Image 1 (cartoon, helix red, strand yellow):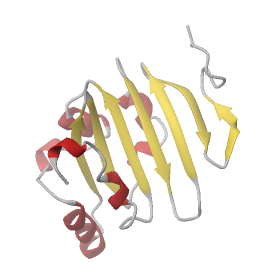
Image 2 (spheres, rainbow, N blue to C red):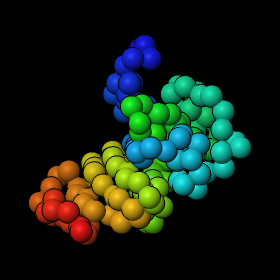
Image 3 (cartoon, rainbow, N blue to C red):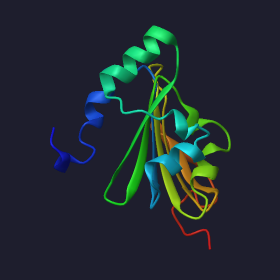
Length: 142
């Protein structure tokens, strides 16, 4: 894929991971997003999808790949779901907005939108009518 493909490579990621957790944050740099996810950015190193997956399966060490596209930072977790843990998306969205897409092999899948430290709306893909957050019907929280 070329640089102009943006995040099209995410389609490939689902082939390697049992859990899929991708966190997007508007206006952040990738290292700031990693910090907000609770990672130590001093341990960051260039790593492709295959290397990240092999690192996890060989060592059990969680890997999170980060980058940016069109004003949004993103973090793709290899066989992990740090972004889906309680309070993490609120921290990521402080003074900005964030979107999380999570799925696993059970099948469970969530889409959650947060702004300024608050979950605005979230739902499980298989029951989209059961929403949660400060504005679960889609209206503005203010």
